[in-house]
Image 1 (cartoon, rainbow, N blue to C red):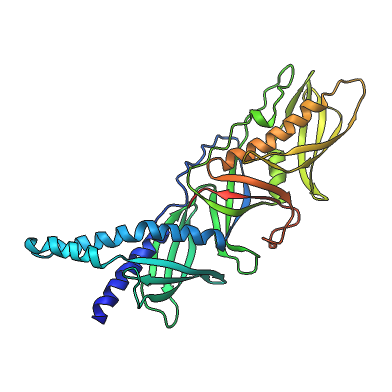
Image 2: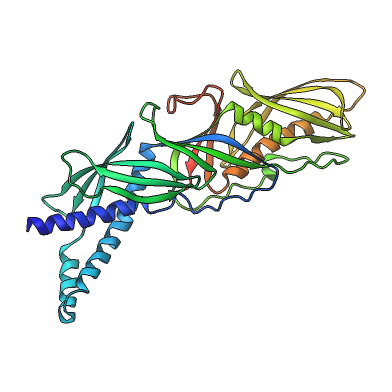
Length: 366
């Protein structure tokens, strides 16, 4: 009887592990990129508290189905006249389930603690601990492996499955035991597409409401996720924007974005035509979130421009806001809902830089 129970526990355990990790990181399609692209470095931090309900939900959905499939396969090998009552008996006696009792991060992986039972009220549930490790297989794929910890039942050992990253180009994945609430850190290259800004007689007025909404999947997702965009990546966005048409043959060029005193600072040359520099515009920008999107808000623009020319400050501010919002919101579309945007590290992810843009929110369901 003990041997039969061990076999059944092993079946439950193996199907459980498959249920934890077989779901792809996201069903979101990758955005198409044009020739004018810039790839910026970003990091994504996932918390253990967000991962726990995700794992448990997958357990609840997949384990009964997977075990029933195994039982059906075993029953079909028996004489046909016995298959009916054997399947009915197995269905009546076995109600396999598993509970994720703990998920902790350490330097070499995620310690996953499980309690496996063959039926409700099982007086002898089996407790098991696995060390789950994740590594980069290629730019879009994570390799997931596991091994039993000491004194734990050997449910599985070796490669389990692969996960497909929903956005960007995966560079590195690590556990983050010394980074506050974060359990996993993913380093990505995030492609941004820049459209050519054609000269116009007058700039179009663009507000946050006119930006395309950030469509999200209907799945629950991972709340409390933090995306870190370092200052060097913010600077790359400024370079990628190129020239902005301000009307009356005026342009903003050589846009430089940096971080100073907890704010974004944009400095650009104001030119007449292609090259005649008239002055400099310095803009202070505060990050914010609205309707699930990043919503940069200009606080102040200081101009040093010849007074002979009529400079549309409001139009300039709107275009700066629009360009930064559009680039990042488009890159994160269908994968991330922004609930908070700040500059600098905080208590939940103290390993981030003081000059980084942090986007906190929900990553679409794994």
